[in-house]
Structures are given as structure tokens and as C-alpha cells.
Length: 158
Ligand SMILES: [Zn+2]
Image (cartoon, rainbow, N blue to C red; front, side, top):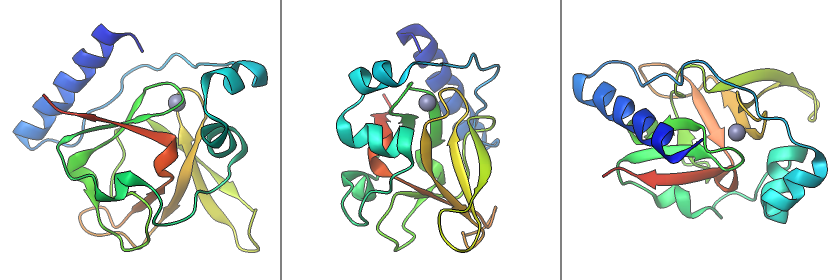
């Protein structure tokens, strides 16, 4: 995402927050497809393992657990805004948790990496793995987006 687009996006998200409307929407998304070699160049080895290979970071290791400032959480692979700070909450799991994603910003699939099926979600633009979606979250959605902190970049508002 180019800088101007990012600021336009942030402005609309901030506006949605002020009016109390649902979190912003990302609008039409142009997919970002890179080769494995290109991803390796663009990401740190840890980001690569999580975003491209669906690894999971150890709990209680991300600095974003403690992040409480207003702002936007972007995909570390392509900068798409995935979550806003007003949807973040402390789930007690040790991973950054959100009860709502920015509309259209993440897609889900069923993952059978464990014995039981889980709902995996990933960035709608670059398909980078972000985390897993559970149904034990707080009101108003009842959802818990359990996110790898390393897969996100936080951009403070203002
Ligand atoms: Zn992405």
C-alpha cells in the first residue's frame, strides 16, 4: 500500500470510530502475489515462518500484547489494515486478540494441523497467515481473532 492510500484508509477508519459505526472497510483489494524467494527477501525469517508457513509464535512473547494506544494493526506482509485498536482486548491467552477484523481484510479456511479442525484466517491481500478464529470472544461479536504479533505492524493514530 502506498503512503497516500494508507492515510486515506486510516482517515476513514478514524472517522468510523468517531461516528460509532462498524470498523472501516478495506474496499476492493488487489491481491499481492510474490514468489517464495521474494517473500524471504521482504520478511524477517520469523515473519516468513508465521506468515508464509503458518507457524505460531510462543504466547506472551509479542510486545503488541501490551499495546493500548489508538491506531491500526496492519499485515506485516503487505501493510493492509486488518484490525483497529478499538476491537483489541486482553484475552489472557498471551497473543494479541481482537473481537472484530476490519471488514473484508481477512479470509478464513479450515485447518487440520491439530487433531480437531480450527478456523485459520489470513490477510485478504497477500494471504499471509495471521492466526486462528474462535467463538469465545466478548460482546458484541463473540469472536476471538487470536493473532500472531509478529504478523502485524502497529501504526499509532495521529
Ligand atoms: Zn497481507
